[in-house]
Length: 313
Image 1 (cartoon, rainbow, N blue to C red):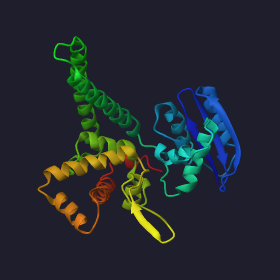
Image 2 (cartoon, rainbow, N blue to C red):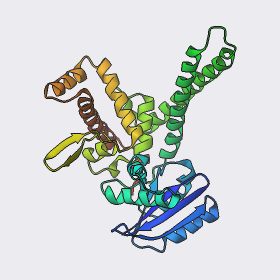
Image 3 (cartoon, rainbow, N blue to C red):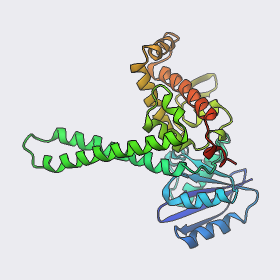
Image 4 (cartoon, rainbow, N blue to C red):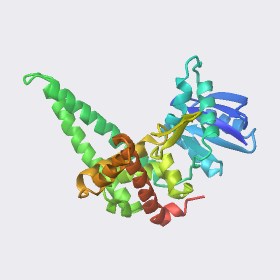
């Protein structure tokens, strides 16, 4: 199996082919144009059997190419940046697009449990909605923070205040649009404790077809919620998984925080029991997020509508 690691950018894309031993068999850099994408297809066709590892496969500047690969029944994997960052962090490593593309391929070679992508009609729209909502929310938070730091008579207040009002209004519109899409696709998610429209939309946007995950444990691992074993010699310990899809991890964190405040103490009791068994607060929260991930996986897995199911491979 040849792994084609793709490092996409708004202006150009770089692909590197690696065999199962991690040996580079060739590379190609092309502009992000129709002719460049054609060259990528031609480069990939030289290798068989093959699979594509695309860093951030949901990014808008590579979405059309990924859609073409899926339409042609190619095997495609979206590699989260959190899985390639350890390679970039190594001291003494040179940095280039070719090296980055190699790292994307190596991340897939090292994480065989990653689920392949499947074409799902609603996914791209929800990604645009939820990711835009997240960016505007961060801008609103930053603008409100900047407003608090200003002196009472500052003229800058007259500039910031309208910006904040516009952001608030547009975020309400986005929230409503996301809620309507979630109700069309999987309304059962909104009945889960701690799950609102934004969290539900994020789950559907980042997961696509939940049946691409072999089990709830695989899904928890993909979310970065399952613990990972780290050790050497006689020292062995479990620690937080720094990888996985960070947007899904954020969604699990929000659900956990809502439940800790609103579910009558059940989640807090669970955390207290974990603490009594010697776990730290952070470790106990990770366990809670793992259970939440399994619950959400079960809900999504059993409530797939025909417009999702019919598009699965």
